[in-house]
Image (cartoon, rainbow, N blue to C red; front, side, top):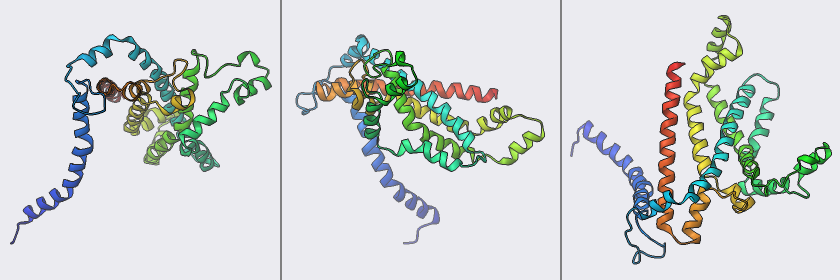
Length: 294
């Protein structure tokens, strides 16, 4: 049977796309649809015989119970820490993308925390923050700043900041490497032309570097937002949510696996997904508006 080139092309493309599409539907879209369906039920996770449709009851519980959004406030600390982390990563990326002597050594040092296991880092910082023998309080003693000693994980006024710093320290090197890759894609001819025209370092950064890596910055901000809303490992291992350090994801998992309210937990997950989508949309609009002004 002789098939035309167009028909053969369609068959080949369809064959190669079939498996990825099936996997995408099976492991992404189907679970998403079922998640939304579960959010309208009282499913307890033990079987579908006792699952009943309850309409908007779970969503009403979420929006009328201030506890859920009070916990969401704790995620704000991680978001602020993520913004600082992104700024520092860009700062170090610009410096280490220059012809600085020993820059590869500094790149490795800053990237090393990302390679370490999250559990190991959390346990390490438990020791750093320990009230009695922690290295941070010991350092303050040596510097004569004993009045600054704190219960870093026990004081509700600062414990979320302390946990957010751990995430900052852990992921800054990864963001730095991404920024370095983006910076190396910018032609040196642009900077040379700017220097000839009398532009200083700040003007070159603002009018050449930032517009060239705008998409990467946008990606980093999206990852910062999603990472802040998904904060779990660090607070779970270091405090187990004690002293008002529980995050939205920790609360969702408690609702599902501790109280067996999978319907309510699914509704929390849907709300979280909608919040991320709305904030990302607003962020894209702001960055797009800023880009047109530049």
